[in-house]
Amino acid sequence: MALYMFDVDGVLTDENARPDEDVVRKIEKLAIDGHVLSFVTGRSRGWLSDYLFPLFDDEIDWSSLYCVSEHGVIKGRGTDTSSWDLDEGYVISDEVKDKLYKVSQKEKYEDLIQWDQTKEAMGTVEAVHGDPGDKEHLKKTRKALQEYADDVESIASESGNKTAVSTYGVDVIHPDLTKKIGATWILDEIHSAEEVFVFGDSEGDIVMAVTAREHHIDNITFYWVGEGETPQEDQINSVASEASYSAGTNEILEKHIG
Image 1 (spheres, rainbow, N blue to C red):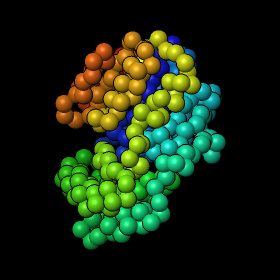
Image 2 (cartoon, rainbow, N blue to C red; image 1 turned 180 degrees about the vertical axis):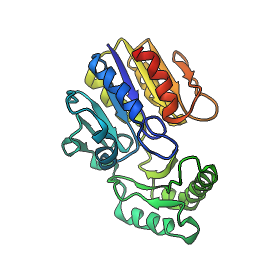
Image 3 (cartoon, one colour; image 1 turned 45 degrees about the vertical axis):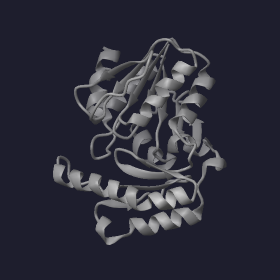
């Protein structure tokens, strides 16, 4: 039995944040083969429910699927997101969210970033995606996200929170919140695994593999489907795909389901 831990944004989605149906079909094959599957994402449970889970074959029993949204604030099993638990201790205040929202409404961000209304625990903006293949718009949204992150850094720090820039967005979150929280919950729940495969596209994703190492699992592979240099950690086999985003995940999973 192997444990698969997937980030969602940039791993199960393409560069315009669209879930990849080919990747979903391969994940379904892993489920049928009896592997333990989990998602650890910064996305909200509402987004997962609206955009990812409707692609799943409802003939498959997903009750053992481990899900972590908003990095670790919300945790649960199965695709019924209403049954998942919210940890109130990691929710930032409405006052902070209001300040962040006002910054996101600046004219310079129009048509480039937008406020994410679905988040329950954090203050988030995400890129306004252009047409598929529009590299110029993608470049502009990435620049806008970084500028927004700089603009709200003081709001985050003065309220005792931190700023996290991801593939498609910027989160202002509780200072202790990382994917280690979600990964720890999953690994504690399953107790043991022969192998762990972690899929990520940002430096913060390798913490899932590190958490598996801390749980004394020996056979761990971190699959990098992001851009830039592949993160490295002792006792973890890091492997980069040839393609980025879901195309890279699809490439790797093809070898797993062979």
